[in-house]
Image 1 (cartoon, rainbow, N blue to C red):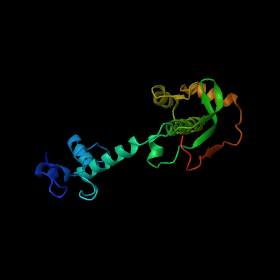
Image 2: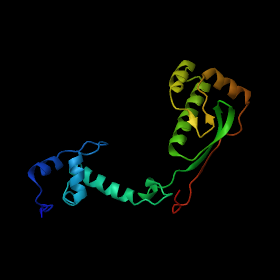
Image 3: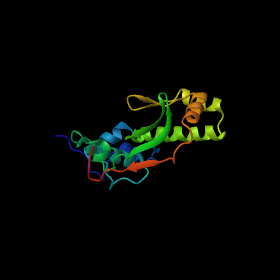
Image 4: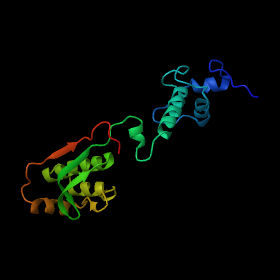
Length: 181
C-alpha cells in the first residue's frame, strides 16, 4: 500500500510549485489541483495569493458545485443571489420600440450597454458610424424573438416615430433569497 505524504511533508517539487505566486483569473496547474483533491493542499497549509491556494480553492469550488440538484444553478448552489428580473422601457429593436424583459445577467448587461449607446447617439455624443461599427458585430439577440437594432439611422427614426417617450423607467425585482431557479 502506497503511503501518501502528510500535508506538512509535501514533496519538494510540489511544495515549490504550490508556493509560487498565483496569477489572477488563471486556472492553477492540473497537478496542483489533483493534489488539492487528494487533500495534500488545503487552505490551512497554503498561503493566500499562491498557486497552491488557487488549487485548494478550485478543488473546494468543484466539490460544492458538483452537489447541485436538478433545477438549481451552480451559482445558486455556491450561495450567489439569483439574477434580478429587469424591465427596460423604450428599447429600439428590429420590430420597433418596445419594452424588453430580461431575466439573465448577460442580457441585462447587453441591453444596458445598448441603451447607453442609444442615448449617446440621440444626444449627438456618439457618431452614427461609430455606433454601427460597435453594434454590427456584437451579439444583439435578447430572448428568442427580440433583436436589438444596430443601424443608427433606423434607431434614430424609430425613436423619432415613437414620439416623446414617457418618463423612462427601469424596474428591478429581486426574487426572494431562498428561492432557487
